[in-house]
Amino acid sequence: MMWRPLWAIIEREMIRMIRQRGRLVSTAVRPLIWLLVVGSGFNAVMGQMGGEPYHYFLVPGVLGMVMLFGAMLVSLSVVYDKEFGIMRLLITAPLPHYWIVLAKTLSATAIAVVQAAGMTVLLAIFGYVGGQISIPLLLLGFLTTALACAALGMVVAVWSSTLDNFAVIMNFVIFPVFFLSGALYPVQQLPGVLKLVAMINPFTYGVDLLKHALLGTSMTLMGTDFGVGLDVAVLLGFSAVATLVACLQFSHEAATGLLDFLRS
Image 1: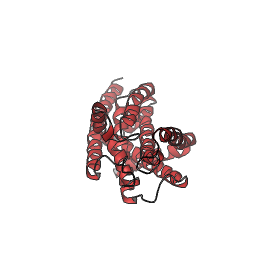
Image 2: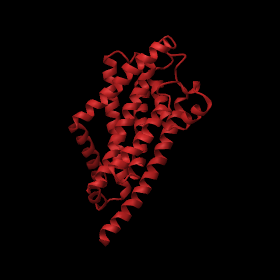
Image 3: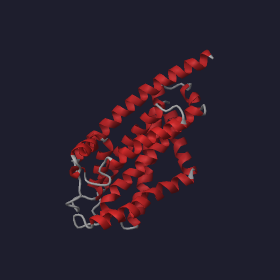
């Protein structure tokens, strides 16, 4: 019985994504702009890296961007529900408060994976995904990276009381997370401080896992930075800790808000 409300929340978020067509279009357009504009610019300056155009190195980062932005937008629905009173109906339902966080996290993960898979097909059609792709590693990369992005989004969402607060916090989180990773350049070639920050960033390991799946050993100068085992361990560890923090904060906030509502 506990799985029915969980699935209901996930289904609601999936339907919302399908109905918001502008959101789906922006999901495809933003990464393509990065790939075509930024990729072409870097490729013109840096030339061939490891015998391959820079565009190929940028593809894992582009897919990571899709999942990062996709998961964050789903997390936005938590703040929307809190601000417009929908969350009050959910927290009064006969299920633990942490189930709401878990359902939202799984929803964000599923949507991010679907969007990344669709973008992969689109990039394959344009010729940016080569034949050296590893499907099992790619699926693993999608699931673990999307889960980490969803957990990060939930941490931001549970501490945001309004949509404006979420937008401000998200801008301070999402851009450093993306730029201070291996999405645009190899981590091992960064200066000392930036390299340290990138190695602390969990998104770095998600992009690196996607590099293992998409690049393999074809790019000797700009390939992977870490091992697959380390990538998966960091992503799952961060997801578990971030989800736990989000659950604890949301349960405390929900209990406090419910008591204030009953007293009023």
